[in-house]
Amino acid sequence: MKRTLGIAFTVILCLSMLSAFAPKVTAQHSSADDWPMFHADPAHNGAETGNSALTPTLLWNYTTGNMVASSPAVVNGVVYIGSGDDNVYALNATNGAKLWNYTTGAPVWSSPDVVNGVVYIGSGDDNVYALNAATGSEIWNYTTGGPVVSSPAVVSGVVYIGSEDDKVYALNATNGVKLWNYTTGSDVDSSPAVVNSIVYIGSDDGNVYALNATNGVKLWNRPTGAYVWSSPAVANGIVYVGSDNDNVYALNATNGNQLWYYPTGGDVGSSPTVVGGVVYIGSDDNNVYALNAANGAKIWNYTTRLYVGSSPAVVNGVVYVGSYDDNVYALNAANGAKIWNYTTRLYVGSSPAVVNGVVYVGSYDDNVYALNAANGAKIWNFTTGDHVASSPAVVGGVVYIGSFDDKVYALASPMPPNPLFIIIVLVAAVVIVDTVVFLMFRKKLKTKPKSSPPNQSDYCDFTRLKVYVVSSVFDPLLWSISLGINEHITLFLNSFCSR
Image (tube, rainbow, N blue to C red; front, side, top):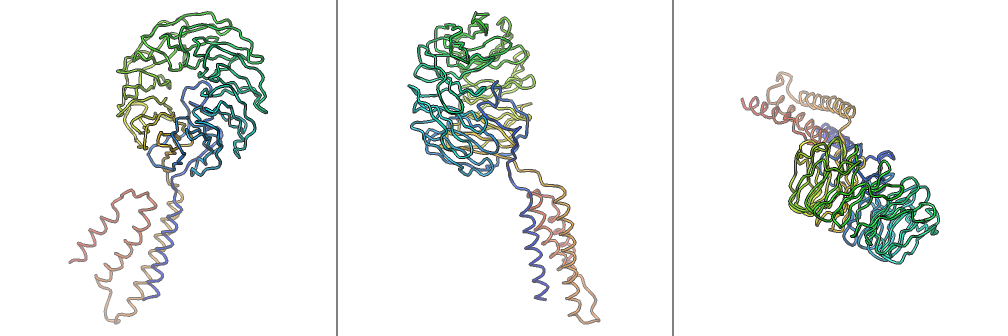
């Protein structure tokens, strides 16, 4: 009997070990699914195809030494992000292990651009850095005359970036040699757009500039009368940008002539999104605007209860945007009708990302939210330890985002179990369990007098053992989904065996 019980224990142990190989929470990555810069691509629309994260499973978090407001880039299975602790980090996207960190001399609020195996990023220590994406070793750094908050644009082997020393820089992406710089009249915190060999950028001196990308010669500038923190969008030969003089501008990309402007009632620091001949932008007058890209005519506006600094994402005819009135909004892109809003517990300055029918966004209520893009229903929220101003990157079904609690988070969904794996293991389990029960039953029969046939008690004892063994396998294999099998059989046995 001891030998038989030993066999039973061994079988249970083996089946439990088999269940350990069932699919777990994992991250999947492919180069086509990368998120190499803020809002995914140079259009900064925040929309990507790919897998979405449907449950708030914490895959990992990594603790830096200060708040994380930089937005992550994710390339080839690595998360790149800056922190207020003066460091740039590279973290394994699957498990959060630190691959490397590079220490600058001041907080890093700039968001990285990762191109051809190099991480380009600015720092508050006045430098622009190029770091080897694999090792973190410094390839080069270039020292400007002021903090670098602007995020870089890397085009055709050149890094374009602004600095608070009032200058726009073009640096050789390979060695960091300055190709040219152009001096404006104040800080340059706006991030550049580079289209058709022209660099478009705003300055705190109130101007929008167009600079020859090759030599830095000013092609034109257009005064607005107030800070230009908004980063320009360029579409169909027109530059669209907001200004703190309350206006949205459309400028001829070739000569800077003003084609139109639209006056809002507040500062426009939100960066525009241009889709289908319409400019979508937020304003500190509490409104989201949709303007005809050709003539500036207002198509619609939607009034929130507080200012809108978030940059909108436009996907499948819907505008998704956050507001400092604590809400995330989904608005009909054609007429501005509210499709839904979701109320968080504090203001939403994070710019949303939309992937596979799910809206991901951070809030100053310390949460990261996943909302159904169609109806706004909360799919999940995950609570960090402080405000979330970083904008998310979503790659391979995993949401990567920073928080003011000093951490970088990876939030994932469990991969669905492999059906073939389940079938194989369950068949093996049934065969093994039946064999064990048969051997134990036969062993007991041999110890009974030949005149004593199997009785109801024998049947109950061994069936209970069988149910126990099978249920020990079912739970981990089926991700603790209650099928009611064990409960129903147990109820039957309790009734039958008590007779």
